[in-house]
Image (cartoon, rainbow, N blue to C red):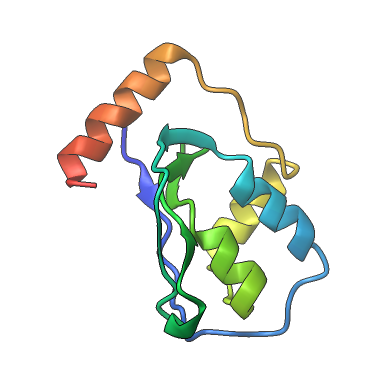
Length: 114
């Protein structure tokens, strides 16, 4: 399948794009691959405590931790240009994934050790 893992550099911050809220919405509306009820400590500002949501989301092409939206919103972390272009090309709409696609994604996630 070849899922692409969305990796953020938590120290990379640039001016927010005009469509930041649409990009955040896309991150938040990803299809849940793994749901985790617990939160982790904010690695940028540990004093905030356990505020970063756990879990994994996808759009069928990219895979990302649920906490990415938190880091973009709270700390202004910059999303990679390739991912931003992908989201814009899709019109900011996460496509629906059927049960077969989700099963294939789950297999790949396990293969990747995530």
